[in-house]
Structures are given as C-alpha cells and as structure tokens.
Amino acid sequence: QKEVEQNSGPLSVPEGAIASLNCTYSDRGSQSFFWYRQYSGKSPELIMSIYSNGDKEDGRFTAQLNKASQYVSLLIRDSQPSDSATYLCAVNSGGGADGLTFGKGTHLIIQP
Amino acid sequence: GAVVSQHPSWVICKSGTSVKIECRSLDFQATTMFWYRQFPKQSLMLMATSNEGSKATYEQGVEKDKFLINHASLTLSTLTVTSAHPEDSSFYICSAQGAGTGELFFGEGSRLTVL
Image (cartoon, rainbow over the protein chains, first blue to last red):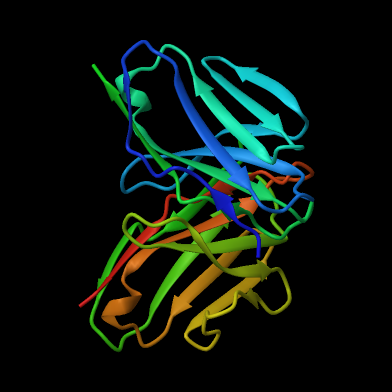
C-alpha cells in the first residue's frame, strides 16, 4: 500500500520567517513529487513539482527531494499571512496516468 | 497551467435523487481524468480514474453503480451520484493530468449536500 505521511499540524510560523513542511513516502519507486496548497473550501492548487534529488527553487518556495531517505520537503521563505493554508504532499509512483497519492496535509498558520 | 473547470460548485439535493457533476478541460485534451472525494479535515481520496472512450477504473470500496462516470469526449468527464444519501455529502473534485509531467490540475470542486 502506497502511503504518504505528513504532520497534520497546525504549524504556526511568525510572519517573515521560514516555514518548513515535511513529507515522507513509502513507495521507493516513486518518480514524481508535488506540493499543493489548499485553502479552506477550495480545491488544491499546484505550487511546486520536483522529480530529481536536490533542491528546486521557485520564488519564495523551495522544494527538496531525497529519494534515498524517501523524503520531500517544502520551504516557504518570508512567510506571509496569505500563505496560511493546508499544504498537501502528493506522490506519483506509476509514471503514468494513474493519479496521485496524497498525504493528509499540514495546516500552516502564519502569524502576523 | 492547464485549466480544468467543474460545475456545479454547490449542489443541494434531497435524499434519493441523483446529481451530475461535470468536469471539463478547457485548453487541453485529457484522455484521463480523475475523480476525488474529500470529507472535512480529511485528505483527498481517489475515487476513480475516468478514461475517454472506455469504462472507468474504480478504487477499492467505491461503488461503481452508485458513482457513474462517463468520459465521452477528450474534454468532458461527468460523475453522477445516483440515489444520493446524506453520507454522500462531500467535496468532489475532478482533475486532469498534464502531458508528460504527471502534474494534476484540479477543477474548482463541487460541494454536495444531501438532505
């Protein structure tokens, strides 16, 4: 059974600080990794994708992948109150059109 | 990113009636679409994979006769909740996969309330 684990939180971070969100996955053959942001009552929005080991930066967001440790993380620099949301980690193991396995999400709160 | 549109956003129905939710890919062709369900404070749960021109593939525990999926064209998939009951009340979200990268783009979601 493919599993994606996240700490549900809430994770509280002061405005302007770095928010660090972590995710582990069970399927060592996983190939694609995604971070989605979901505001309450809304559908998920893709914010980052990463496919190879290392860091990938996009604006204030940095995704980090370590396949040996089966670990993927998301860093949010200069956190803003508008970053307050649930962040979902998603993993695609099949490399094809077979959907994603989602973690339960981490509820992030940015305190002004 | 790709645009996926879902309709209706909200629907309230009486127990025993059927509800249809539409999912459209607006700027790309999607041979495969996915239907998810999300209960409050829970993660997204994949219900079924919708394949254009063929039968949908349902996840374990999802009743195919209750959740009818039709994917008649490359830009439209529909989910029909038949004989809905209050326990079917949930947030239903469709998605389509971008070509090559495996990224999923989500529709706006449809919140179903069964009275």
